[in-house]
Length: 333
Image (cartoon, rainbow, N blue to C red):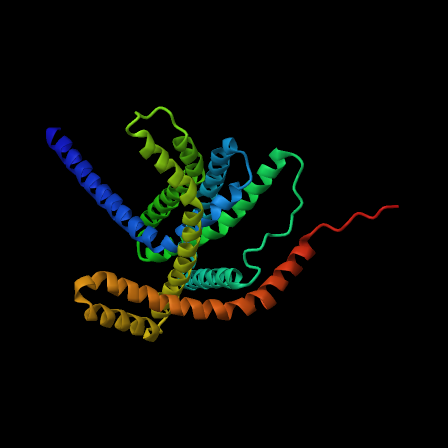
């Protein structure tokens, strides 16, 4: 009896070790997959604050919370099961789908650059029809933000799945869940801080609670937050656009390598290693910078080529499908 109990405990200990190793492997792969999705994460953080512009300060955080819940639903309820089914039924399709997401990232990044470079790029947008009910307006904005998040979340989950193609089903599910939840908390936590930073700065600039010796410093920090947020958001938008382009280009180079066309990826690797060898003091940083630059050039070229295709083929086709699916207008007697 005691021998059987010892054997059982030994088996349990062995299973615990396997489970711990699996969790550790999943955590490590989730961290690497999340890093590869950095471009989409930065873009998501740059885009989301625009959806709370124009609302009362008391509604900003609740709106961000509603969008975050919608983002979690997108990732965990819709995209995670779809990704797992894809990995079981058609794993060969992961790389092409990932490359399609890379093309979209390149297209969106180049389109943002072109929009910003036009003379009217920063002109005020034409006034849209605004619902009279503030609740209806908020619901409309939240729906729009969640729809935008669905596209960005699909890119994140595709990048994540492409980062663990040979992992077991359980590890893939764990990595997708960890990356989905972690990135959502990271992005929308940062967005909540961003949208409230100017309010916090205003409160600090008028604060009377600090001791007299610290009050000028606290007021200066508050004014710095108020004045610094607009340029910070512009910088975040620029970094997000650049990240989309170099991440998209990197995805395409890696995808070509996986599909049996290693030349472009080999050339990019050779150039980055050569650049790093020329600056041995900062070898790692220079190699990463050169690799990002080469990926960025690829992303720019692909994004520029994708713009006419999206504008003259994909967009008209989507409009025709929407018109076909739209309900027919009622005839009045």
